[in-house]
Length: 470
Image (tube, rainbow, N blue to C red):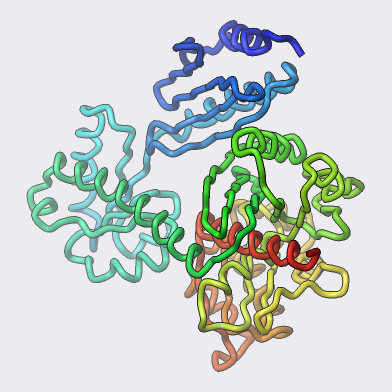
C-alpha cells in the first residue's frame, strides 16, 4: 500500500469532472456542492487510514448515502466514490420536499398551496406544495412527505395518522389558514418536521433499552437490502447499553466488502468486542447465507468472520431478530409474527416468536413464505406489477399473513411493508377468509422501528450464544 494513498485518492477525486456541481478540498477533506445535494469525504488517520463518505439531500436534510471504510485499495475506493456521485445525481429528480394540503373540496387549500409555492421559491426552500379534496387524499398521499389538513377536516387527523404512518400528518393552525399566512405556515412546517424526527427517534430508543442487562460487549449489525435503498445499521452494546451506532446507506449492496468495512472501522475505533451478531435477509444454515443476489451461498460467512476477527459470530434472519426484539420490550404477547415485504420484492418474509421462543424449524427456514407465494403468482406476472399495482401487493401480503395465522395462530402481527401502509385495509383483506374472531392484533412498523427491534433481538441472540459456549 502506498504510504501516500490518502493523497492519491484525494487527487483522483479532485480531478473528477462533475457537471452537476463543484468538488473542492477543505482542510484536507473533500466537499461536493450541488443545488440539490451536498457530499462530504473525510479522511481520518487512526491506527489505519479511514475514509468516511456521506450525501445529504438538501430538500429535507436527510442522509441518503453514508459509509466508512479502511483505505487499502485505491480501485475499490474509486468504485465507492462513483457510487456516491450516482447517489447525488439521482437526488436531482427528488430534490423537493413534497407537501400535500387537503380540505373538503380542495379549493381553499389549492389557493393556499399556490401562495406557499411562491413563498418557498422566494425563500429558496426546496418545498413543493399541492392540494387535493379530502375524498382523494389516500389516492395520492403516499407520494408526499408531509400532509396538512385544513381546520374543517381536522377531526380526520387521527385516522389519517394511522393510515399514513410513514408521513408527518398535521392540522393546519386555524389562524394561519384563515389568513393564508405563508410565512407562519412555513415556520410551522419546519418546526414540526424537526420535532417529529427527534421524538420518533427518542421513542424507539426508549423502547429497546428497557430492561437490558449484560456484561459482554456485543457488536449488533443488521443488513436490510431493498430495491430502493439498502441500509446496514450497527450498534455496539456495552453491558447492555448502546455505546455507539451508525447506519450505512447505499443504493448498491456489496455484501462482503460493506460488512468488512464496518467491522474493520469499529475494530479500529473501539478496539474490542466480545461477539458479533449479524441479522440479514435470506435463509441461514450452518454459517451460510442463502441470499444469492447479494452473496454466494457457497461462502461460509460465519467461519470467514470468526477466523478474521477472532470472536464468536452469530448470524440470524432479520425477521427472527425483529420478532424477538419486539417480544422482549413488552409483556402482553407470547406469540408474535413479524411480516416484512421490502419495497420492490415479490414476497414477504416471516419471523416468529412462539411461546416466548424464536422458532427456527428443522432446517432453519421457518418463515420463508416465498415458497408458497411464488407458487400461485408467476414471476412474469409479478414483475409487470411489482412497483405499480398496490392491489396486487395487498393481495400477496394478505395471503402470506393468512397462511401464517392459519399455521401458528399468533397473538400479534407486526407488519413492515412500504407498499401496504394502511393496516386497516390489510386487516380487512385478511378477514375476507379468516373470521374476525380469530384475527390477532396488528401493528404497523416503519423501517427505522424495525431496525431498532432487529438490533436489539440480535444482541440478545448473541448473548445467548455466548452463554451456551461458556
